[in-house]
Amino acid sequence: MPSASHSHAALIIVGHGSTVNPDSSAPTHLHADAIRRRGLFREVVCCFWKEEPNMREVFEMVDSDVIYIVPNFISEGYFCQQVLPRELRLDGPVTQRDGKTIYYCDPVGIHPNMTRLLLQRADEVAPGVPRDRTSLIIVGHGTNLNENSRKVIETQVALIRDGHHGFAEVVDTYMEEAPFIADWAKLTTAPDVVVVPFFIADGLHSFQDIPVLLGMREETGAALSELGVFHHNPHQLQGRLLYYSGAIGTEAHMADVILDQVHDFDAKHGIKAESGKQKAEIIPALAAWLKQGRDSIGEIAITANADGTFSICHSADRGQDDLQVHHDAEEALFIARYDASGAFRPLHSAPTLNRGWRLDLATLDELRLALDFFYPAALGMTHALEQDKLASVPLREVLGRQTGMYRFANSITDEQAHAMIGKCCANENCLRRILWPLTPTQPMTKDAATKTQPNHAPNAIPLLCIEACTHIVSAARKIARENHEANQPKSAD
Image (cartoon, rainbow, N blue to C red):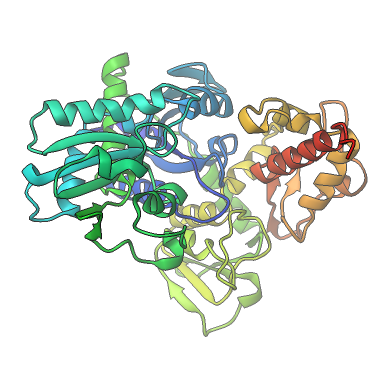
């Protein structure tokens, strides 16, 4: 594991995330919190493919000149080999950019210690059940996009099988390719069956889809975050007792695997311990803004107390005494997660922040952390803008670099792009100010142009947007698909 020598560096943990519920990103946040509490790194933050902060913004959240990036992904597949390097602007394992050194580590799922976690999870889910009468099934997604996606599970099965760990049999299965998890009863013979999903989170696939394929449910049920409890074991199915585990990525010791990947990267690339003066820019900038009377950001009011502590609350609750009081900066993540109706808030800058709370924080560092949970990268982007160091990315460039199902998003017309931005980014949907144009030489027009103008009060720290978010990319894909369908020849019927 990393030693105190990493106290000069930042750790960025990258997850997939979701726009539907918080289940996909929850384990990544929990592992980041656990590592942050150990004090091994100067800074520990997360970023996501489908949630905030995105992979372009996250670099504005750290001051450190040395950055380790660990993908919280299962395999070396499509995302880790193509999407993440593209979005994080990486040149390879080591990237030098803007005076920073960025180290890109292997994904957690391929680390050798994953075998130990799988065995531990199997024993935990079926306590007291003898291994010699148990079939262990490791289930993955399965895809034809990248052969490495399947390879990582096959490797784990071979390691457990060849390691003589006492199971009656060990098999790999998949959701979308053979051998299929739906055929589990035909693929196993032991009276007890333990199924461990080789996924990062208890999201749509592991918590909702696979139970249907196993026969535990007749139809897809609610998400884990909606139910609050996991499936009860065992399940009597097809004359056997089946024990279903939570996704391997939810195991608390995954934080150790993240650290192991950093240690292994150092060993592989000969990275030596570093020390020296550490620059601090975001914290001093925040202190200066507060001294200037800039005491709000988005929907949050900031109070600098006489004893040197800080309090934050919803702006509409300023001065109220009947608020629920919290004292941990990490609580901001949970406060920001749902709106007043209980709906998930994948877009932090949506004007839907819940009311009725107050967060009391002892230090400026805790205040910064809490504000980054509420509005990821907002402080860093404002500071970079004031230093004339903040670069925005034109919409066409963002859409043009998309791959997979989003690769046609850039085919929308300019008129459609302007209308889409004016509608999707309207203040009732997002409080950010857009800094990006349509192209390097073509600014936004009509309703979209209004979102490029300052929209914050004089006493506020602004919310800025340096490139189109995943919601805009999805909206562009939808328009492009509608364009394609409209241009198809109509049937003679």
